[in-house]
Length: 356
Image 1: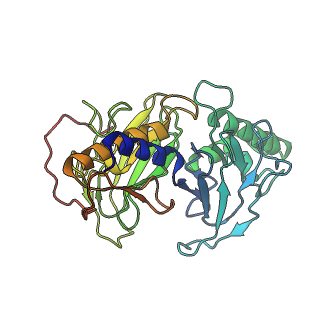
Image 2: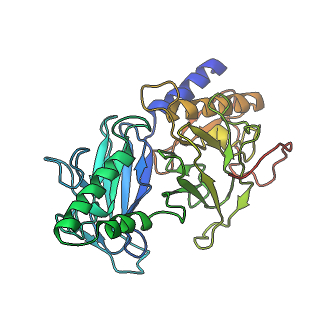
Image 3: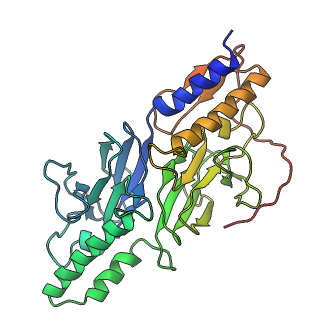
């Protein structure tokens, strides 16, 4: 018989060293807008970043913080991928596997060194940029790109104001702050958020898109990941039928400051089927790798709670670190019993909540 402490240790190791995450990024907007969404992500070594190309014709090209609109010597380059307006199926993709915790800087090289430069309009992206307050934030990187665009426009006798405005309006909400898109659950009800965590600045909008089957976006805390934060936001449950891809519900959170925001799905809470206990958690501005409050540490705490709930019920627990990751591992704690993955009826105590 496997001891509870050994089971929790095994699950913690699974969270930190098990299957790598797959992070999806769109390249351009549906009508050719010049942005990446999300504009930056936090990733760990071994994670896969999949770039999905939207219309019209963009690239994913590695650059550097100090020279955002020039290719990095020996860096990766997807090449151009023209996509007709209206195409939503079979779009090309490009994959990058994260090698270490260092920042990776990316730009679109369409119309490079001209007044129409996509990079000069702010079409840049970053993996593991500096946290707010550091010298190499994503905002600082994009500012450098916009300055290059302004210089190119000035040399062409164009309005630099118009260029900067275009760069902002392509991927921002009406308030002038970026919108970061996050899916809640996988297309077949998988218990994941995608991406699992993002870097955002005050005023940014995080828009959650609900996939099947029935999930929530509920604020919690680092030390207690599967418990609703008193006074925190809660989307409520949003059941979505399998196969539905249009008109899915959404929920928006506006980032107020640079502090971390911890989120979980409260479906089947306090039971062996807890979605949070299976690792369905998300974070805005978690600690960088090497700090004490990383996303991996947060998810490990959630998985430990799931192990304890399964142990008390005498069940086996299945963990999925991220959608698109390797086959989930099953850790038997006392005995093997079939666990229903779907919890459509959940009893829970009312608690104060508010929408952001």
